[in-house]
Amino acid sequence: MEIKLSPLEVISLRQLVREAIQMYEIIIKLVNTDKQLLGLLSNSIIPFLAFIVDGMIKFFPDDVDYSENNLSLENDKFKKFVVKIRVGHKLYNDKRYTKKLRMMREIQSNNIEFLTSDYNCLQQEVIEIIGQKDYGTFSYDGIDYFNNMQGYIYLAYLFENTSKVKYKEGRQYYNDTIRNISSSLTVVLKSSVEGFVNAWGLIIDKESKINIDSRRFSTEDSFLIDSTRKDIFNDMLPSEVQIFLHSNLCQMNFVSVILPDVLENRADLYIRFMIITYLEAIKSLDIIVKENESLQDITGIKISEVLNNKIYKLLSKGNIRNNVAHYNIRGYSITNLEDRVDTDNLLMKIIELETGADFYTFWKDFLFQFEQLKQLIESLIFSSW
Image (cartoon, rainbow, N blue to C red; front, side):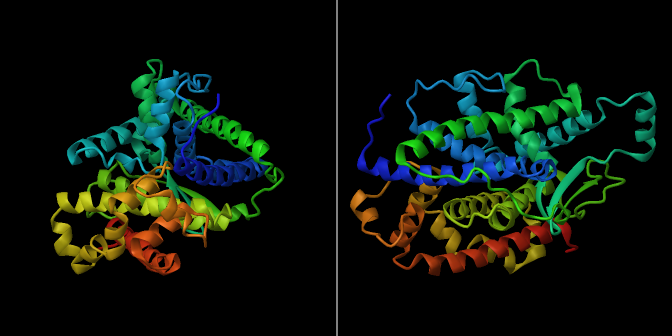
């Protein structure tokens, strides 16, 4: 079925396809890499993969059927699921603070049930004595880029919409479901990208792989829900808040470290996801600060500087924020965008139009604020105030 697009939609689609191809190249690298690295990286890429797939779905006709997925979701429910798990869906930022904390407590409790579901009686007795480590962290060169609680955010919508799902099915169910999420998203991405690659005569290297020593990666399990044995984070904030902040920090680290250094993307995807994860994390911090006024006194002027810097104010403007979060460009004329002939990247063009300055001047300031936010979150959850 032919899709009729306006000139603005045409250049929007080109931007989406360029980023989709970059994501597809990343998936190819992961698939061609040894299973150990694939296992270490595949979960953390899900929300970013979902973002691209959501963009593709929104450009396709409404009658395209996605019901043949590995998650047993009907067409409309699959579309909603993709939106729910994509980066930029705010990691529960759209929930009221009290509801957010309650959901995080539920995730912690469900995680324990998953971890202990297939233990026999003797193992259960041992756990009663020595405790159960429940918080898993994935790191690269000592930098956290994923935690196991993020996986439960992906599963939340499935639990709401699939009656057969039960936590007591245990870790195997968790692993199988995460794998099915990845494969379902990849199928949509692959079919979409290969259609454009063939139509436009593009070439993709299907033999590329990740060339990183797996010893640079590490995983660590810690006590979190067991307050008497807790050995991760400080004791300054509730554990639910710490999970919330750490999940945002992990996403920022994935984009700023894993994406360019390991997955070797410093192009369109990198720019978009850096901005999205920054906006998502700073909004999370803003919500927490408003609900915990003592943070202002403890951290002093630094926190207000981070929350009120000029870069955040610029990116919060409707035109930039909305066009970072979606591929169908709104709020600009085709003439204005085509006049920016020095780059094909629409986000770079939009930022130059809004600032009236060279993109790289903005980017230098943005990277500084990005690192400032990361350091602040780290201090809030790891340091002694």
